[in-house]
Length: 194
Image 1: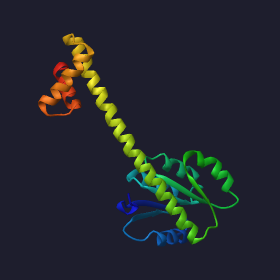
Image 2: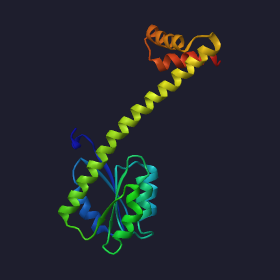
Image 3: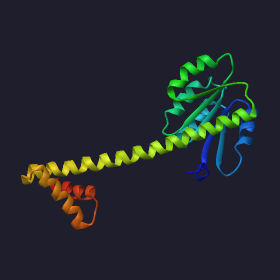
Image 4: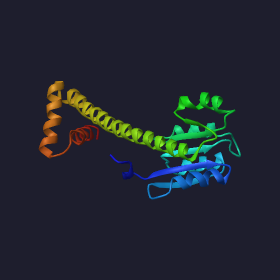
């Protein structure tokens, strides 16, 4: 899978415009949808309104340092976060944020290094995307199992079926109606719980 298949929504958070301009220059093109904030409070509002793939913070911010914002943003589903921190605060910020999956980058940095960091953030986002797909499929399968089991227990309680007979009944109902087992089970549940 090529990264170019996805457009990345990126939020840049920095008190100054210089950082935003420099990062924006590295992220030009249709592959990126960029937005920026100059404060943590404004960034939090944007995070409530939209889902971002990547949040990059240049610490310190106007209204807070920025580490708490990164931790909060990394708790959003699928958001990869990075904080650029000065040499004198790097160790402290790393200790606070790395356990939450926040990438901590020590300033000053070269343009080439920032480009490399962005590539790593995109790789992390893609890996997370794969895991999200797998988790979604697993959750869907578990939901089907829950519904089918509920229908089977209704058949066992109300009709005296064995578990194997109840399972066959759900499967046959699905096959006869040309629908999924989950939908057939839901029909059984709905009929008995009227």
